[in-house]
Image (tube, rainbow, N blue to C red; front, side, top):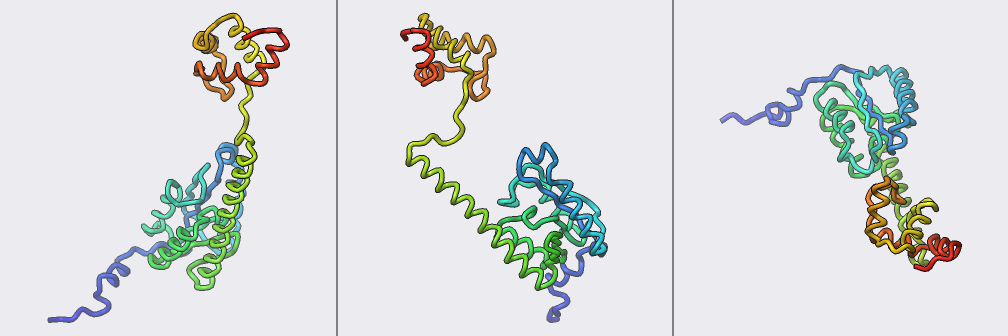
Length: 246
C-alpha cells in the first residue's frame, strides 16, 4: 500500500488546483454609511481618488469596483457589495481587495481578523490605501489587527456613551427623541371642531378626507391621536385664546 506524500494530500491538491489571479490586479470596494451620503455621493469620490493614487503608486490595476451605499460597517452581513468583492478575489478574478480606508471594509475585530486569515489561507491580499498596509506581509497583518481593534473600541465607546446619555435623560423625565410638530392651524381646527361637539372619530375622518398630514407626516389619523392633541399644551392655549370649553 502506497503512503500518500505531502504533495498528494487533499489540502495540497486544492492549493495547486486554484487558478492564480493576474499579478497586480485588485478589485476596489467603496462604502458610505448613511442614507444622506448614499443620496448625495459624499465620500465616494474621495475614496476613488485615494484608491486611484494608491494603485498608481503600487503599480496595481483595478479590474472592478463594488459599492455599498447607506450601510454600516458593523458587520459584513447584509452588504451585497462587500460580498461580491470577496467573491471576486476568492474566485481569482483579482489578486487582491483594495479599500481606501480600513473602516470602509470592517470595524469589527471578528470580521477583520476573519478576513485577514481568509486572505492568507486563500492566497489573496488585502490593501488599505490610507494606511499603506498590505496584509499579505506579517507586519501589515499585525498593524491591521491593532487598528481594527481600536476602531471597534471607538464604535462601542460611542454606543455606550449614547446609551448612558439617553438613560440619564429618561431618569430626569425628559422626552427621548424629536418632538413631533403639528401646525398650529391644524391644532386650532381640531380644538374648534371638538368644541362644536364632533367626536374624535369624526374629526379624524375629516382630516383624512382633506389630506391633512399628521405631525409625523402620515396620512392616517386615529381617535386616540385627536384625543392626545386636545390634551396638549398648544390646544389648551388655543382654548384659552378663543374662550372655548371642551
